[in-house]
Length: 356
Image (cartoon, rainbow, N blue to C red; front, side, top):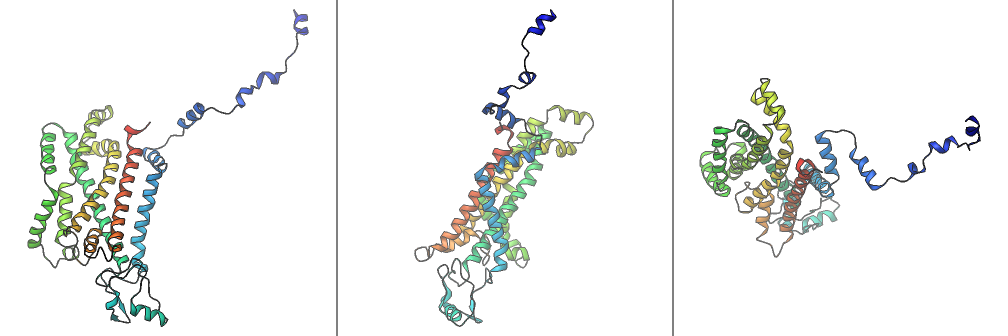
């Protein structure tokens, strides 16, 4: 037996260890498996990673950031106020009205020829001789402020109301949802008109808030707080009805956890995707509503501008000065479109039902 083993051909030990197939390029299926087996991460971090892969959402974020930076920087750079009538050498210039973009009046041209430096009118001037670029930026600031304020109101009221209704259930849920149905059926524009009439007679006109915004704007804020939270409340209630019967909720209840603690620590974090998406989509809705009401003459009080009131004022000289309508209209479209696309991107990134 030993002679047979000695006479058998000996194999190279390296040939038994090296398999050429191991050095072949990985297939697409193997690459996909490696992509799935990534390191553990949090829900928010994973959602942001997917959001950054959405080119439309990234472009929307860049657009919103640019608009916000413009709102913050322009008032500090441009030497004109949004309600300031342009003066040259301390005297009012009557030829500075309705100038085209980057156009100077006769007095400004004479001052420039004399060696003075005049800041250019990037978007021209309006019918009263005010710099239009500053007014458009101020209008964007007002519209964004309204959208953010409305979204915060919707977030606070809707989450609290929907959480209580969905968690309590039974008769409490029935009564609270019938109240939501009644509020949902109220016409918001009619309520704003009625509130404007009532507040105009009851509010103190010397109040700094009323004096700055006007009764119409105060009425818009009141209506946002009274009516616009119902959609958020319905969505949060529906999510809680699905979550509250899970085992970890029943365990927290069995351990003696209070309702407020269970809602804050166990239920709301599991509804965060719906809350983020609804809040993001509420901002463009509020901006569009404010712009529409300002266009109809029920928005901010003059001389404070908004994008809707600027578009309304530009209608009178549409054929002669079309740029006065184009600039605020384009900015409204950019803001609303950017927030809508961002909301869609947040939905695709954070909604667990859409995840693969």
